[in-house]
Image 1 (cartoon, rainbow, N blue to C red):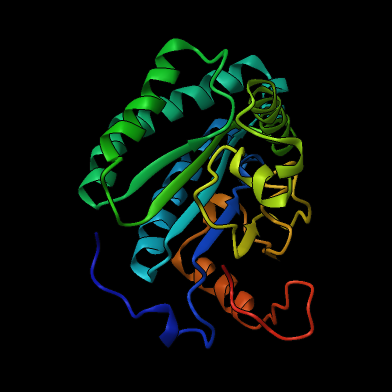
Image 2 (cartoon, rainbow, N blue to C red):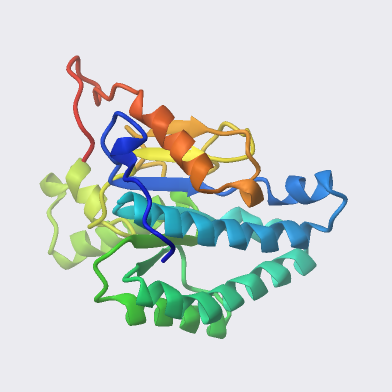
Length: 251
């Protein structure tokens, strides 16, 4: 890790959010604005990810979830998909040891079935190597879509009902949550989307029911600690009532 920085409490008046989720958007537009190929935007996006993971750990955030590759991204040109998969391979092979040294636990959410075998093995390796770490939890949403996650949860519940381990009257909001991809993690307190777009794009639809949404104009390759702190300062100014009349703290 780099040198110590001031805790977020010295920067913003609110408490540190326990769980921050980020939709990393704008790599292609960042590259286009500079006359560069889209691939260069993706490569710079990996650098931004490294900066953000480091900053999240330094600021005392417990869980950082990143939207790295959606189920809809498979519709992109084959050359771009190959480049993105190559970046994923290099990130895990080159950065996993550093994440492990810094006590980061890696979790993967999303559909594993149908992935290229070496990609699937790398995802398992990342989780297994860091399983015992108890610092920042880095959740990588890969081949992920929130509607698809809910469909997987429904299938799991249907199997449990058929097997008799779950009764119909036991199905409630909490039960559904237990069948999601990472049921033990808290819901995100804040979801940040870069590049100025203002939508969730099929990301954590169930978990974001009461998340604060912060949209920043910065393209993802330019995102850094200062941009993260700015987003968290905006989050800190929000009053969270969770549907009630009295302000409450996050999960």
